[in-house]
Length: 534
Image 1 (cartoon, rainbow, N blue to C red):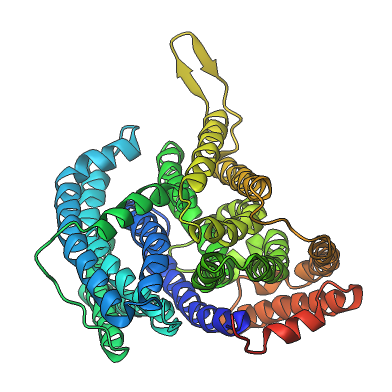
Image 2: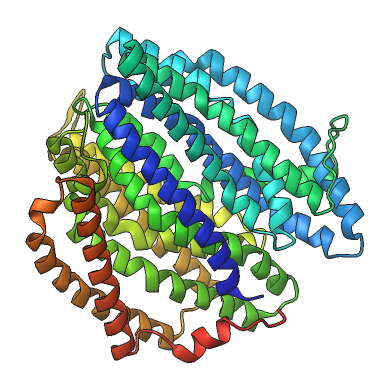
């Protein structure tokens, strides 16, 4: 397997999806702005997405892919893999239907718990209705994840990496159509919000059709049978349940984060969302691509007791992830407000909104390398069917996050008063950063203690040189940023020009310096680009 080839496939398609998502958010900010409607919409949209990332993409993929791969490449071959996937689908579907029914009935209480503080009845009703409209998306996208896992097991990564593009395109069409209706028919902001909410399950149906077609192309024939709990399905459930927590620490933080954001000023949820949209760009392209690409291969190496091969894949993933993530974090930390202004400011999203979201982004990206490293390290445990360790890491990270958030916003209980630090949304972003780095530290310490993996000294040296190159890039951006101040909130071409200058400056300085100081192992990169047998 060529790691770079698969990461390139997943990463390039994820890049298209993230760019489409960025375009979606740019249009969203101009059409809806940052107000009570957008807070309600984002809050409703976060709920199914957290469930999706926790139970579908994170937990299910971590448990299903190694088990499906073992059957597909073992003695049973395709028929054994088909039988296993049919059994899983037949149990998975009714459970998802039941989950959707329960959550839709309980949605008012869910929104109330997340809000906690007194909330405007109109905004509360909007959030509940938005969430009920969008929550069935988890059923559709969970089935998409099942089909994606089947395709990933045969190294067919492109269909699974491309399906998020469909959601972004459908939402963009809904936003543009709603804006036209608002201008010509006088639609209110609330009505636009409802139309865009309905676009989410519509996109889910299209995504499911797209993945189903590809599973048929690859020779799989998914069937819904009478549900039966086989030993394999039972084992999958046992593995997936703790993986839902261990692999989804970042998503758990997102849900808890929503609770704390609702304690702050109106627009806090929106400002965090716009900042996190930029933060998610490299996380999705680098972290998720690497995590998806290395899990099947790590599972093969671990199953074959090939420690050298497993260590090589893990080191390659760490080196590649840091080579790309460190400069992205430094660039976004220095140019946070300019980036937010260039991309989102306009229409109902004011220059003050851009400044507020920019300050949040400047803090949030300090944890970007940690978020990516969690994605890269966790597959080493999943390949060994160890989902408990990531659970412990998640709980420790979550405890630190919650404690930091309480310290930021304050707490008053009988006999106990914690004075707030008062850093607002940026303080909550900082809490997320601290929790993410503690997560990484715990995971790596366990890998070393159990003898699973230790970072080679040569790799540490190259990461150190990457930091040197990133520092040089940061110094160049510091000066270039101020020279283009007037362009950030100007016309489209001025904004695009400023963005290209900043990104181009970053790339030239960083990679030039990286080659100069030896931050890139040229021989290793050359070897990675060549196909080799696992």
